[in-house]
Length: 224
Image (cartoon, rainbow, N blue to C red; front, top):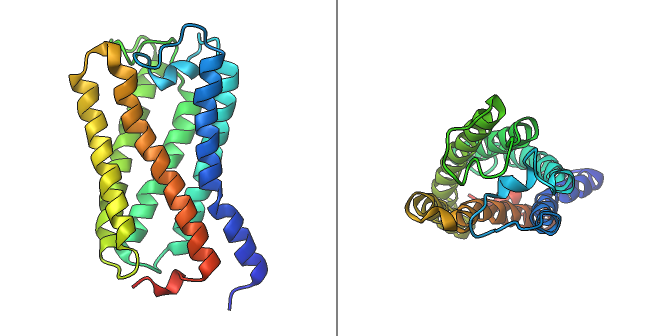
């Protein structure tokens, strides 16, 4: 039987994902408030934390908290469920964990030098801009792999096939976002990017609440 104290710690850590989601949307909302003239239809979310952005200070603070809480959650998720559902889900949670680590450290160390670099689809002008785009590419790749593994792994369970379906829907939304980014005029880049990014953020929130309910109900060993 697991120590009640440990269970309470795990319950708390399981909610770090949803807390991170709140901080993410806070960075978007407050960043926009402090960025006069910001256009969410055409501008990238990363513009809010660009070096020359008037909203950099407040947006970066909330973005940092989002990254920190999402990393702690992803590590907790991987550690708690490691080997207890199936190998595919375990591998998916590992890729998910790596994705949050890359996102956190990558965007902290490599913010855009100026707003508009991504949305204008121009060559990045500085080393940090180039690395920012590399980080984004890596985040997308690791997210796609983790979602595919989650989809397959959870569909193989008897009790939580619905999470496999949610993973598939998130993957589909991610692909739609990628297609829209490449097909829509640059005036709508912000909308296309938000379809892409928000699908990932919402998925993190869903995983967080799911883990909390699993820990609360003691269902961890009943998923096969």
